[in-house]
Length: 183
Image (cartoon, rainbow, N blue to C red; front, side, top):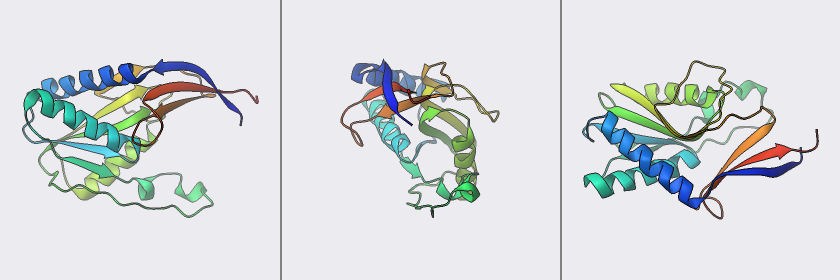
């Protein structure tokens, strides 16, 4: 597979603006920050959850708990993989039962990652409500999953790849569409 950059969907400013908007929407929908927990799906979802918590702290003056969720063992394609999965473990240092949990991920595609994350969360506790925040929703759902908060909706073809780059793991902040030119 030979992937080349096709389009830049968001640059650093676009990512920042989308996260600021999502942070405001989370507070508005939840009528404040009481009983709110942010949980990022490893890897980039964790960084996004931390950034959302920072923005909420800036305008609400409240530091929300942020956890990380490793869904490796909950994936429905484990039996199809030949290599042994590497489990990093989940880190949620607060009780999630009877709280509103905002699950955070970078890209929503088929919905299978979110389904695995829901299973993992339920094994940890029983939240009052689970909401979903994603930086990019690219469509092509295979499961009936819909995000509550979206940075950008982007119609894509199945042959395209949406790549989220964040300063914490990559060189800069951006969202790009890559296209397979080997077809």
